[in-house]
Image 1 (tube, helix red, strand yellow):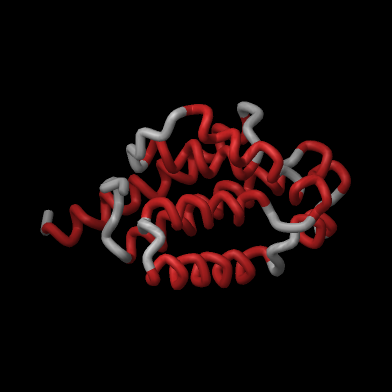
Image 2 (cartoon, one colour):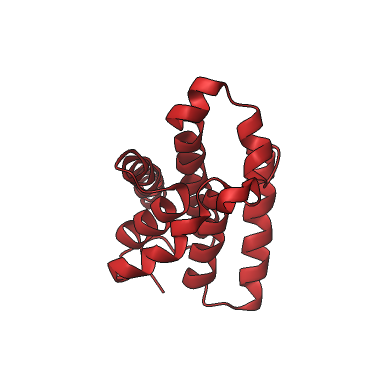
Length: 152
């Protein structure tokens, strides 16, 4: 197996690991933002203390008003942290936002949830999927920059 093939295998494994872990945390009762933050810390070995995830506590259901999606907010936080707040961080954040809109049609939780059935909204089925896809987008953007698993 060539080095390029091995890299693709590792990339695929981490992609799935981050997305799956974020989805698992959501199922355990963490909200979308908390799930993104905690999964990223675990998979990228950031070593963030557990109480740091409280930052994402009130981002569920668009900060309670339906504004910004918590998965988007959590992703922006992770990208900012992992890229060190450099000028290129802004580009990463813009790319993440663009990809997020491409997948879900909006950054607004209320708009995204309006497209869901009553049952899906009640059971947070689509929110769980949004969390999983968002985690995959984060990995994709960081992978492009070669920062998989390196942490900060």
